Image 1: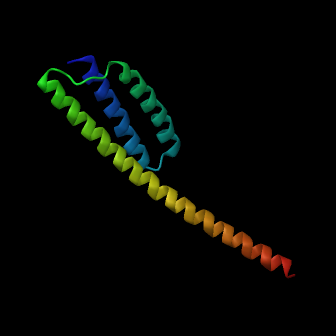
Image 2: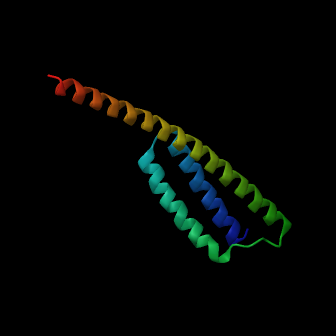
Image 3: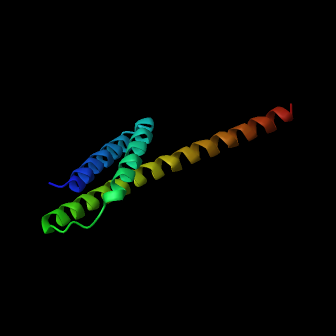
Length: 106
């Protein structure tokens, strides 16, 4: 197995962990893993290529598809969380305005 395939397997492992962290609402862990993922991507870039071996090409393609599927799930989870957070913040602001209005009248 080539170094490139090993690197993509490691990257896939990281994105799996990221997906699990997002699914569990473990935001600090997700942030830490995202940094690790970025470092791994930067390490892969200098020697990334299309493998000449057909089996390795197929492996790389399968790993890329899995990484992209993980990414889509992570985005789905984080966007849902961000929408919930936005609703909570808007509700809190409305409460604060109501309290300020109420206190200003008394």
